Length: 329
Image 1 (tube, rainbow, N blue to C red):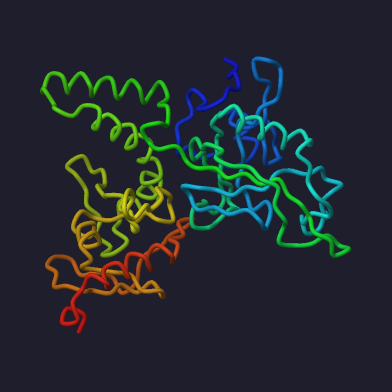
Image 2: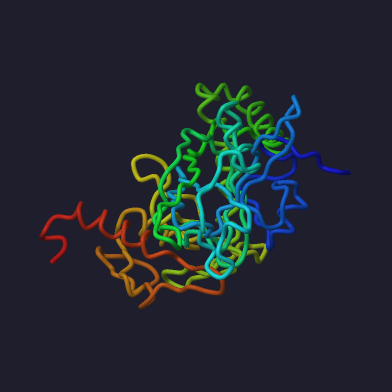
């Protein structure tokens, strides 16, 4: 059945879903074009509104901080240097793509954000695209680009600020709604006191499990810290996806593969309580006495999984700040 392009989530596509190439993103109806950064469609009144953007190393003025993004508008090919991709002249708010995204800002429409492999390595996969949910355009402005035009004059750019919608506001897909409804029925039977809080957590966990599942599948359950591989009676491996920089306040770590480790339950606890940290050279530092399997000399990394050093540094410095001088000796 043909999938209709819409504003907001696309039915059948969950936040965190991965697509190997732009053509796959296009076929899923997440974006209208195979190359452009800004996607648009016709609104009810026939005017064009932006429905999605791709973060794929577009312009030097772009900034990606996961929960908020500073995004540069679009230009026709003739206004860009074919070799470097840098702008040759100023952008216009009248250009179709920029006008459409500006109209979504004015109408307060959410925008789908897709991250590509040439985006910020703290959040991007090394060779795929990933749908990362809905963002709200919170501000627009005309700004001056970091690089001038070939003649030395300033280049004006159309600039958009976007903020990621909070998890409870990320509208669930039909599959997620079904899971939430089932759990709500169990809540009623068990007379749970806080169903709304639990429901929002379920919505988040249904989506957030995708990145962890990909990491655990890659390592086939083998712990990246100690090398242990646990199996259940059915022969299937058991492991846990551990966020290096914790998600949620006050740490606000992103739920992305470069911030996730495949760990056995023991090492997950070791990481969470700061008993082990990882150095910049990926060596594993034991900070507290431990029983059980010894840790490896260095963190194991396989295939496409590239842990970003910013997250291990954040985790290490967090626990070093909390330790007393006697504990660090």
